[in-house]
Image 1 (tube, helix red, strand yellow):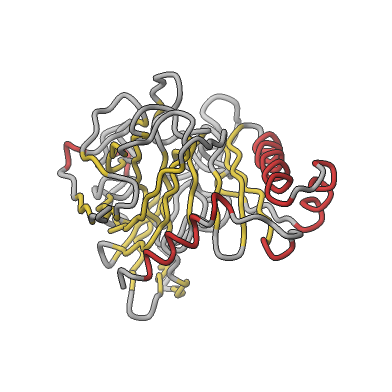
Image 2 (image 1 turned 60 degrees about the vertical axis):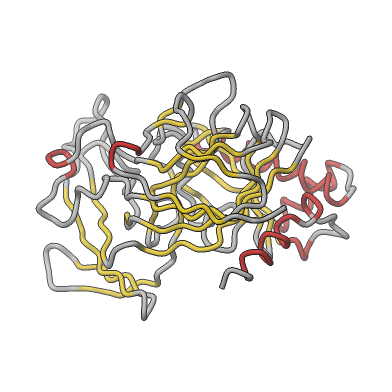
Length: 335
């Protein structure tokens, strides 16, 4: 079967703000390469310290995604494998902000005596030649270069049961996962919930610390290239990631410990399946060998990952017959 490269660049009124409830913007096939232009979480309207989101953005139209894309032959009970080939900043700047009632270290709007945080915007310079993201303090002349580490904050498929979910919410379908692990070289696996899967993505970050403490990464527009493959007759309840080195399960919930439990319960089962270990043996191994990167602690659901090095697993089977390696090799052929 011939492999096509589909390039999609939306105009402003084509962006979506939900997963589910939208008609597809394009049709793709298993095996295709998809190059998608995405906008930042502010829709490109916040460009510097003078552009306060509450003044220049139209609430609640934040976190636009490009898509959805109808994937031929994807049916409920299948898995959609999405390999991130590359994430290229579309502009030489990005922005971040604080909000009065948003983020991990602010008062709430309904149960606090202290004043809310000030709304403030930071503009970051992005230098792709030196792979640097330059932080500028707003109240002094201090600046520092941070490593450029592009990621996609929001990616997912349509939820089950014809449900419609805001793009700000992470859950079983994916969504606003906000984990730095969603970078180039990573394959993400989504359980398909409806005919065509309806893949969508956006909310690029030039970089983000684990937890996204202030609630906002270094927000950028991107040109993101993906390689797709439908895995028939196999599904997963929660999104999973695979890199050359690790497998990772994602859990989304509140409180944070429930997100932790979901991710680790899934990884223990996955480890048992791949290795043939008894489930309690797998639990013990993950307990001692695993790590738990935090995605976000700000969104309507929090995101926690459970990760384990594949090299520490006893004789693991390749995930989905080696789809990550196949997609990685296909991506290498694009360069």
